Image (cartoon, rainbow, N blue to C red; front, side):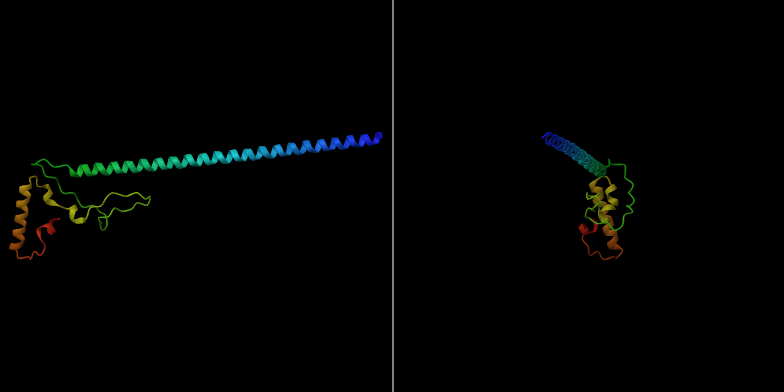
Amino acid sequence: MFNHNLLLQQLQHQLQHQQQHQQHHLQQQQQHQQHQLQQQQQHQQQLQQHHQQQQLQQHQQQLQQHHQQQLRQVVQHQHIPSGRALTPQPPAPQAPTSCYPRQHPHGHQGPRLVPAAAAFRPWRNIPSPPGAIIWLLICYTYVQHLGFSCPTSLAEMFY
């Protein structure tokens, strides 16, 4: 009887010990998993923040480029006061120009390219419109006088 009780006690003690050990092990596992989860979440947050920053930077760059383009266009469209002629700008060294906006590697549009004919217009330096018309007439009659055939109309020649 006495031995039987002792055996039972020992068994119970062993069982308790095992349960404690298992619980401890489980807790450790849970803590480890939680830690891993936290790390993953932190990493995801960092990635998201980084991505947002990149998007912001890209957006700012696009805005800056757009602003610069607008400035350039404004500068080009300013009228020259009469009496002071602009020196003709040298044509840009870009290869065959097209009217289509070219695509940048990053996806946004680059500066709009002007067709070669429109880029060089010496008569735009003449301040008054009547002056320009007279100049055109002189050129046209001079060309005809030299005997060159002019198949193109005035509009096609100069635009």
